[in-house]
Image 1: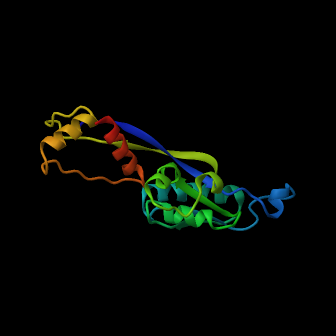
Image 2: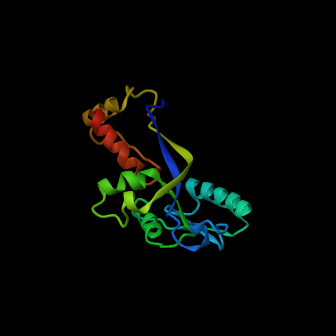
Image 3: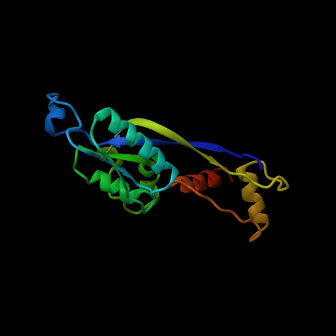
Length: 178
């Protein structure tokens, strides 16, 4: 099997600007109580596992409990929207760049405004998206794959395991290259 393309997607830890409490005035330490990290994908997924590792490291560093809350659904829009509407300076989002960049373009309405509701803190991990085919298939690019699929309707089967919205971005990329 050949790797046709690897596209990197940043997973970011984002947080609302701190506007209340002693941390905002610079008069005290943050956090002053437990921190909740919303993960907009299901428990047991790779991003969930990484968020739990990050959360444990933050718990050790801050000396405060860090609770991971999974809020899956609508290609991460449910959890991302829950974060945007949390109105709590002790809630963070371990989210995907695609939820903020792709979802507003492909979903009729999202429960957040990417420009208004988020401040990126740090990239945490990258995800590689790979497309592979059997070695006997005469495919060397996504354009080749699209051509072969059009020439053989119903004969090409495919499957995926994708982080939210990543597959949508791949489809846009495929269409642009075809």
